[in-house]
Image (cartoon, rainbow, N blue to C red):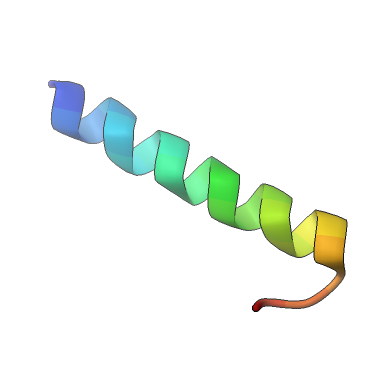
Length: 25
């Protein structure tokens, strides 16, 4: 189930990036 965790981590990182930059890169 490492695939699921990897996907979640990527999604969190993506959302965090948007929150930090204020807009999707």
